[in-house]
Image 1 (tube, rainbow, N blue to C red):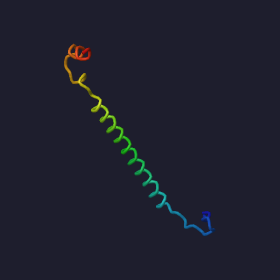
Image 2: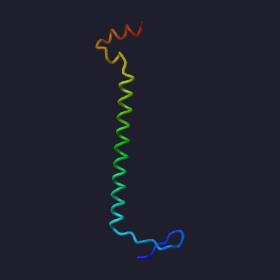
Image 3: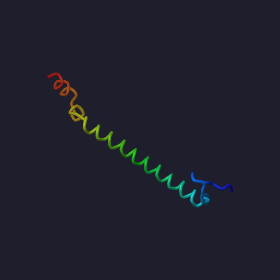
Image 4: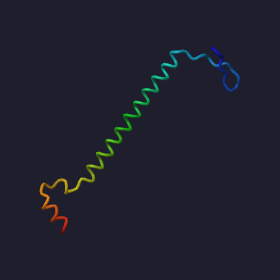
Length: 72
C-alpha cells in the first residue's frame, strides 16, 4: 500500500475499510435526506399554488351560472 503525504510532506495515516464504509454510508444518508427535503418542498409549493389559485370557478357546481358571472 503506497504512503500518502499531505501538503507539508507529512505522512498521512492509512484509511481503513471501516472509514471508507462510514463515509459511503453518511453520503447515502445525506443524499436521501436531500431528496426527501426537495420533494417535500415540491409538494408544499405545488399544493400552496393549487389552494391559492383555486377560484370560484372550481367551487361552483353549475357551468351556466359561472358563464353569467363571468359576463358581468
